[in-house]
Length: 418
Image (cartoon, rainbow, N blue to C red; front, side):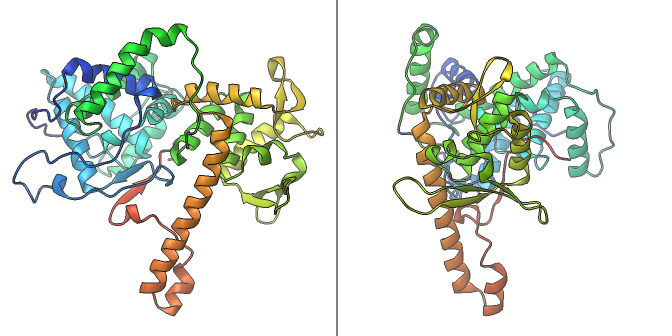
């Protein structure tokens, strides 16, 4: 589809363009550049109280199961960044190629809900970009993307597409993403000038040293909801025994189990319900006492678990065990040293900041508490505004306060589903 591109607007950031370019590159390639916060940028134009950018922006927590918030303020920022980028092309042909790349990216990242311009590009995290490129490299991705585009735009005719995107086109799309994120930096939608300069300085100063010096991963970090889902997808995308094992590990953390509980699981703790098709993981009580726990898996998580069990087999031993050369199952329990290596490798693969096993346990507890709090808030709000009959129907539906009045969407980490 085509859009009318406005002339380039003046930049809101005061940092030099070379720094913004370096920051945007680091944003895709290195998680050390930091996340992309959703805090509202300063007013872009004075005296425009009716401008959507002047409206307050809802806050979302990293623990929310939300990747993108389609609030008018955020959409206006993304629209401005995309239009500024597209207006930088001199020829109509080059602009159309860039617009097509943005359209493809927006379709993948939003699961087919957004187009090239109406998308909050400033909310894209490094792990979103890495996962999007992985999806684009899959066989059959062009057909799935074309189906989603036709579904969103009913006037669009289905086009014949190749079975897979050429490597050169994927690289072009990667470059397009980097440049539109650079535009977000220059407009001040990602970090303010001082934070950006500090991030670029750290990235430039440590780039050479990072290649030769081995640094220990930082500890005491909580992983967000999206980061854990990105780790599951990046691990499962390898398609081998080690990848499926690690995907199950992060899935169980996402469901609230701590590392000590996960490493003590055996195949007997996996409970399938043949009637309902549901799968529950029953964790045993800890040695210090307490109660056992039961967590339910989603269909996607169940598929990953089945892929791992197919390779592990029905032998005795821990559910998640060590692997030898060629993915041969050894049946030994995962050690802390091995788990540290898993965390380091998967963080680099998924483009998330480094973490250690203890961070996973703390993150599991934090996510569990956050979800309980969200349910309690929704229950209190429902109790105040609903009738007795409505309470019985709707009290179980808990939604984050940050999403009120906005559409919240998740990144399709485990692949597009037309």
